[in-house]
Length: 407
Ligand code: ADP
Ligand code: MG
Image (cartoon, rainbow, N blue to C red; front, side):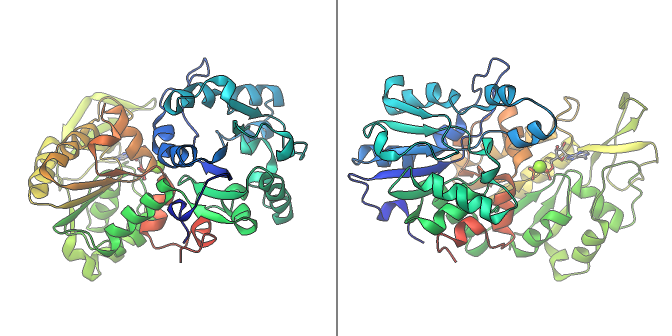
């Protein structure tokens, strides 16, 4: 795979795909610019080495909202990439005048030769046209031809959607001289390291909702132990014959198969959990009950978190680790009554100073990490791709990497 480090950017205009889909407040201001920070190395690399840059990204799911009846004007207002300008220029020492915003390029009305050749060009939201992720290959290919106009070479620096054949990460790389950016390279290197040669002892902590989607990953990770938390725990509990009541419980057969395989020796399912009675409108918090992990959960109850003792046990097992991978919440952490996930984040954040490489992957896990008040700098690597990180760990061939010649 050719990477940006092989690219002499002098006098070239680099067309760069970044993943700058960021959360906005109701006034349309970016509330977390972590994705800009994650993308900066490649952006600066081009600008500092005498190249010029065209930046492109998607934001949100505008096509979906339009299909639901939202007007084009409303969608444009809500998801324009113009908001990025204000947040990115301070990092680059630029002013607003240094940026040329291309709003309506989808029809091919802009020719690069007519655009200011010394400015940073920012393209409007890629997903304002169906061409970005249309099911129709011809439509995607036509859009790629339009995008190609905006650079001499292509750099993909996005790890949000490498597992999809979207035009800006897949079709485009087929028709341009293409390179992987620093972020994309770091992501695949760190994740593959986990599978291929993690420094041992290597411990994985896996939770969240679905076992099925994660089984290939469990099979490939040579971690010992693999600690199971979150709702994933209930698939294993049930497979072992525990009544789990109304707990979220998916993939019991898969859990059973894992427990019947040699993998069983490394799987450790945390015990103590937090159980609550369900009511018609939600949960009856007055009934919060801590179990020993073996006692049955009755039909009208659900296990929603792991207990303090379970956290203490996890902490103890992490003591001599050198590498840790965490994916999946320990409980329903969106509800303030169930915050073992936040405490787990705290434990993991404390490991960096001890020289432990902690890698975090998964959309909801990373959201929880930030909500717990921690930053990605406190960890060895926090993946910017939810589904993509799991896909790499599962050994899937990702189209956007394939087309760059990675495999
Ligand atoms: P990720 O996106 O990090 O891969 P998942 O999507 O698999 O993680 O799961 C995250 C979700 O799992 C969170 O929304 C969390 O609330 C939920 N969750 C975890 N444990 C439980 C539980 N015991 N009961 C209900 N939901 C849970
Ligand atoms: Mg998720």
